[in-house]
Image (cartoon, rainbow, N blue to C red):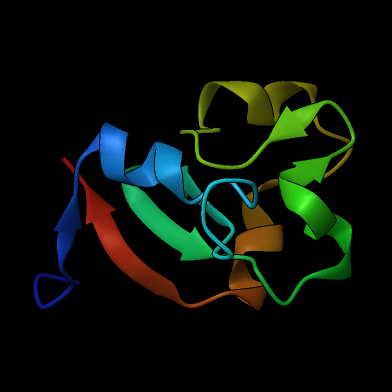
Length: 78
């Protein structure tokens, strides 16, 4: 994972499905591109918004972190 580019929270925030077409989320220091997921259309997934670190919010989700196995990390969050 050391080869992945790093992004700031500000750069992540721009990939919210509104400001730019990319839909990115962060979890445990890694950034995932979920643009192709139908569950993240327009940058929203239930009460969660893209462009954020969702690590703390996973406890309230109806799934565990296995869901991130469906996406390859594209970067690391600074």
